[in-house]
Length: 297
Image 1: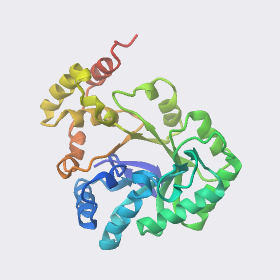
Image 2 (image 1 turned 45 degrees about the vertical axis):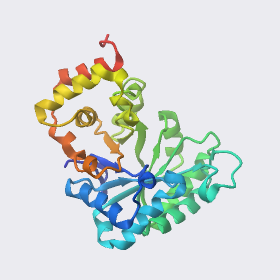
Image 3 (image 1 turned 90 degrees about the horizontal axis):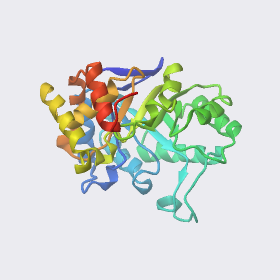
């Protein structure tokens, strides 16, 4: 599988396994989680996406139990996690309202907890999960630089940031922000025209794409014509429609890294099918036209 280079000492597999729903599975045993990880590794999917808030602040610990049970897996993985959202559940159940916290104290405490929960000594990539309207960019930037200097974090990036949020934080940092994880799919195409992808591509910053299948909405009846088109293209490569939707993202020159989340072992086993698909320019635009409901101007 191809790899996306974020920094000289950090690359991600072009497809990333997302652990957002890890805690939703009926089976969260270390053995079952290990089976998911090994299925990914067999396909060259070595990058795993987490966040402290996933599963009501439980998903990182579920991963950690698997790492403790099979410590040999850690050296084969790049672990991405996020911080900055405080929701009134789990360890933050005392919060009166869901809010963002990008203070140095919160970021540092979140990283320490994530390291403990995931049973690792260093986070490969830490992301600020959402733009914080109260962010003191100088304080946040210094905290992120400090975490890198301490060895607790290898590299840092952001998630859901617009270009102006990205540049604001970057101006207060020594270390580069190496990614922005944003929503991109055939059902969420705004990044192609609102400047978000162009901004990252100009700076050679690799975008990560969350919800690349539109949270499953891509396969609803209302998208029947689009699904029929994806199925037709997929048949040429003996893959399903989902693989075509992911291949559509992989085809972009910005080197988008889609984050794929599923608890089904059978679905995990086919995540790399997208790499079998080579879309022509007209294929790409035919999908884009059907997705947006209008031909390009």
